[in-house]
Image 1 (cartoon, rainbow, N blue to C red):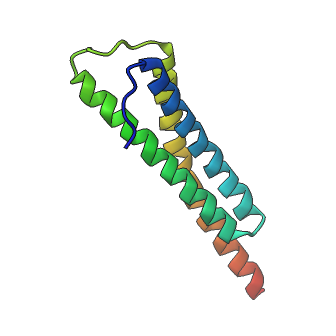
Image 2 (cartoon, one colour; image 1 turned 30 degrees about the horizontal axis):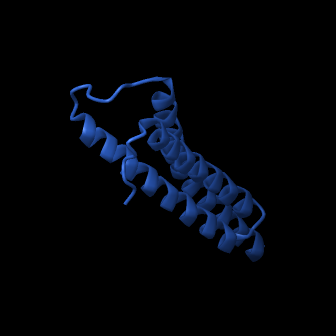
Amino acid sequence: MTEISPDFESTIMELLVFSGGARSSALMALQQARAGDFTASAKHMAESKQSVKKAHLIQTQLIGLDEGCGKLAINLITVHAQDHLMNAMVIQDLADDMIELYRRQALLETRA
């Protein structure tokens, strides 16, 4: 589990890095599926999901520290990090569905 750094900004940067990595991996999974390489696609989606899990742990710890009372300073970089995590999660959901569509399309093409 990632520890919340005494340097709050470092923790937020870690959240950004994991979230950005998750987004990139999900998009790479889509590219691999489009190319018909479903093994590589699955590997990239697994990496994406692992990165989101790490980012979500940080987010959960931050929420716990804040206790809904405004104990943590909210600044633009914090909002930016939250946006990155949300986007990564949405892209994962869409990528899962699109990869399945690519898989079905490839199966139909092999039957034809």
